[in-house]
Length: 161
Ligand SMILES: [Zn+2]
Image 1 (cartoon, rainbow, N blue to C red):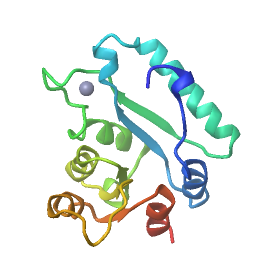
Image 2: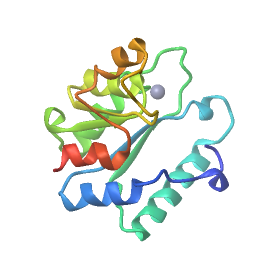
Image 3: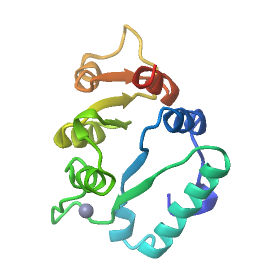
């Protein structure tokens, strides 16, 4: 996403973040933004977009404590691009978080790997409808996460019952 016009929240995001806020948890977003390296958006514009997103969420009752992003290309490798744990380690240091007591919620294997690499517990948000007829290869990738849910609220319900 490089334009505010393209910004849409997934269902349950505001309520989900609000639940984490109420539970007293620190909510941090970590995002790969290769679009900066590709020249699709400047870093200043990306930061402005993130600020606008945070403001929008706060007004809706959901507070994000910080947003970390990796602006780099895949090559050469950097220390922040997920699945490398750099952003999670930086966030933990800056906010005094215990990574072993933290959860990484993500919708891709890269997110789950980053969480594992940082020593976090991991929750996979699987948007696809999963049934008993699910192909084996998808089961293999999803079972690496500690928990799996099909919506953010379903995942968060398992994290803060
Ligand atoms: Zn990076």
